[in-house]
Image (cartoon, rainbow, N blue to C red; front, side, top):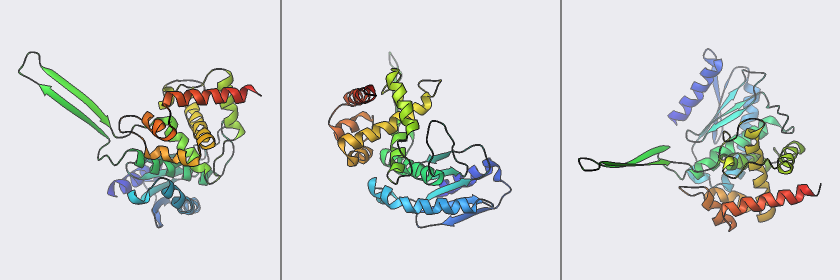
Length: 281
């Protein structure tokens, strides 16, 4: 808890609020921190947090792992709109200014971003399987021999591709109607399919794999589209079940356990589905 509180206060200071008075709204599951002038937004954030918490917590078995979640409300910019979540410290930040982005349609900003970031907190905490560290390095060495040998094996506490982490967060907001697969997103996906410009399964692992154009947004867009595809083709329960089946070394086994096919076959089926549907237009 101390780490989460420190993260919240530090972020506010870095945002230029060092001289401002920080206030906190206390709810059953959240502590919403804000500075003077942002109380109205902070209260909307707090209300939305408690509104969506029961449904998301039930979907991702979060009640067993619950720790108080700290939310920072930032209202120091009329230009930048965003949000972030640090699942390891159970902290999320919400900008009061909405993200006005031409590749996404219009939605209720506060409800959308709060639900999106809260879904990150829950799904990524579940995916990391309670590992007590974020990164470790196992090392085995033999010295004073010929030859000397050192073997090192890195361990990271989370094996989830960015396409899934962002896709499931957008899908989480869709549960409440706070995000939707709108015409903007559909246009972006349709043109990627028709121009043979889809990100590969491997490229969806990070937003930095392919640079230029809108490839970073492609990761969000394709990830969301995949969740919608699983929902429609396999059932809504399969989307949520993926969170519980992520392997310790790779995300791919979750696809086989939940959908019964390999990750490569799933991706190929999804691409074929898109090509058939958009080819009819």
